[in-house]
Structures are given as structure tokens and as C-alpha cells.
Image 1 (tube, one colour):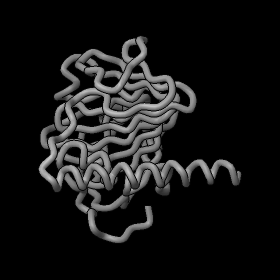
Image 2: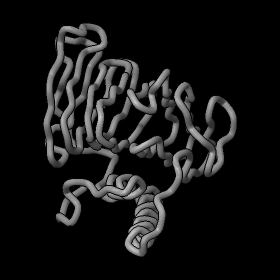
Image 3: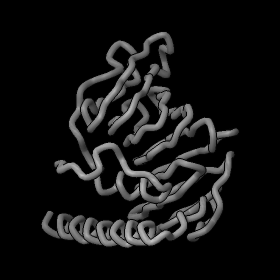
Length: 215
């Protein structure tokens, strides 16, 4: 447990240093990073082929991360932090319309325009939001960190709910059983620093930026 906490602390420090460097660069008039794979550790693949920083990501691609791996990438005005053991598919015109989180953990920030996220248990329609997802076959964790979302059950599409939050207000578990689609949860496994980093990659700041928070 102590080793795990130490590793998390080291990762958090590295993230803070990275964020500080990015913010300093933007303040000095530096350019935003180009779309595609921005940063990665471990085994990261695009369509089964090993990725590297700078590898483009386009509609129809599938991004996978192996054990102890992580990827940060940019598509249009959206930025993603994909954690280990995760598969994300960008089907069709997904760079504009959305994506599928097949399994695993994904933190994402989205620019203007409608997007759709398909998960094993629900379809989530969003616009200009930040969110975190942990997807399993029968249960999906979803935190709408800020913004608006409409959630429809994958098994019972007529069942849907609307969410609007400003600061991690209502994380939920989305169950495959439509009769218990939304179950209250707590905030887990994502931080304000990570959201701020992702927004900075596309030239934005989250709505809570500058406020003191617990996440």
C-alpha cells in the first residue's frame, strides 16, 4: 500500500510539473500541441500497432493501453487521458461525433458541439464537458465533472436521464439493468489537475480553474 501511494505521489508531481511547463509555454505565446498522440507510457497501440508520440489518430481507429500503461492524445478540440487496460474505438466520423469506450478508464474534455459516448451499459450525449468513465460489461462509472449530459440505457433506450453539473456534483454507476440505470457514487480515480492538463492541451481552462478543490 505504501509503495502504491508513493508511486501515485510521484505521478502526481510529474503531472503538476508537466502542467506548469505547458501553462508557462502558452503564456509565452507558444503553440498548442498538434493533434494525435501527445504523451504515452508503456504499451500503447493504435489498431494493434505500437504507437509513439506524434502518431496521428483518426476516425475508425482503436486505441488500446496495456497493463501499467497510459496515453494522452488530442483529437480536434478534445483531449483524452486513457489509463491502463483500456480500449477506445473512434468509429465512423467519431472525431466529430463521438467514441466508444469498450472497456477500461478514460478521462476526457470536449470542446463545443455534440458528442456521443457509447459504453457497454449506456449511451451518453454530451456537449462541451469534462467527464471520467470506468467501463465494465455490466456496470459503468460515470462522473460528469462539469457540463451537461443526457444518458440513455443501452438495453432500454426509452429510459434516459439528464445531468447538469459544475464540479463533480453527481457521479453515478450506470447499470445494464435499465430499471436501476443510475446509482449514486463518489468521486474516484481522477483529479482536477488532470482535467486542467487536458484542457490546457486544447487552449482552455476548466470552469473550476483557480478554485480550491478536493480532487
